[in-house]
Image 1: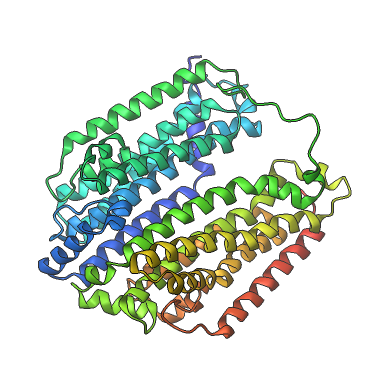
Image 2: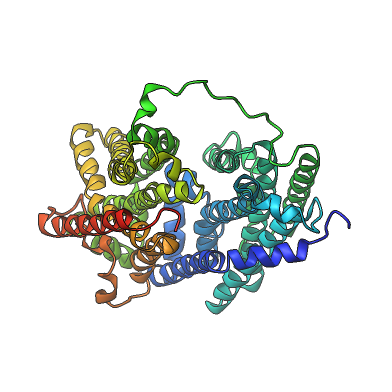
Length: 532
């Protein structure tokens, strides 16, 4: 038996486990790309309109920070590459690093890997199967994206460069995930390390694009390499050498570190906890706070950054959008009857709402993860009750989104208000625009709780509901889907603030639905067997 024995069987096992998640993620990425192409094609029909829009982007540091510079802005392909390179690279990187960590460190932490490796499985088979699956997934996403770009008759060379560039940055961060999985014995910590590296890569790219004195910083970031491919603007094929070299070095480091540690342990020794638990852990809420606070802190920091970026772009957004009558009409439709800047800000607040919904689903599903790990039964053997334990986590699914939305709204209001010298006026408006998203966000949390209580084996469908609502809200409108279908999403019923005066009726209706779903989930948890 050699070190790769059993790789094929493990790969088949991983494919079976991810047979729903991976295709769904790839399809979502492809649909977002299709929405970008369709939107730009419809809103900027002439080269002059596209060039005017690109000049506005290149003069706005907030847009440069978020998306990067526009290359060949007078072409449809140039705008698609600008919109997709940085954000698409981050998405592909997240998918890849989570995939590799899940099938390596996650399997060791759960104890399943020990059973699998007790058979005829080589030492390197587990990591190899995870990396191969990441490669297949990234190439599959590239094939989807390439087919869509060619369907819209974009140049073949640029289409290949962009689609393969996104796949290549995914593979680099698959390598980052392989290294992070060897450093610690906790899958959660490994994901945090890898995600921090990805965040640093995005920041380096952003600083390089916004600073005239240090543009070379973008070359230190794999996310920046996607932009430096110049897809549809020259197609620098030699940049792929950097992707290949980084992937090879990181994967090699993962194998080397894997051979130098004990099974189940990490390169970094685990830190021992205190001998006695603090008083804060004497209640289910205290335990929930201990488990939920890292995610709440991380999401709050992210919302602050996104909010500041949105606020920084707000001052010059009118000049950027004036080059397209179609885009002005679209933003006014999205933002109600306010002016163009209010329409932009209202649309940005709705996107913050979708992001907050992702946090709400994560917080609401934490009890499911605790149950799957077998940590709930010993807890419920004490004086803690089922509803008390669930209520501790529900507090974060309900109040946590309010915290992160408040942070995002305040950051947007402070930055935009300072830029327009109207701080006292803008902060309350944008804080209200963020917080008004809460009823729709609570619907997602309630769906996750209802699934946890009534159908625990289908609990991951909570993420599926979020994907559906994102498709309806962000893609359905771009493709002109029927309004009756769009109304399925709770976010369709949220008033576009700032820009319109909110009505209490749809908000109260959404809150009532969320309460009913949550009550159904809590009732189901009281009756079903734990661990079933």
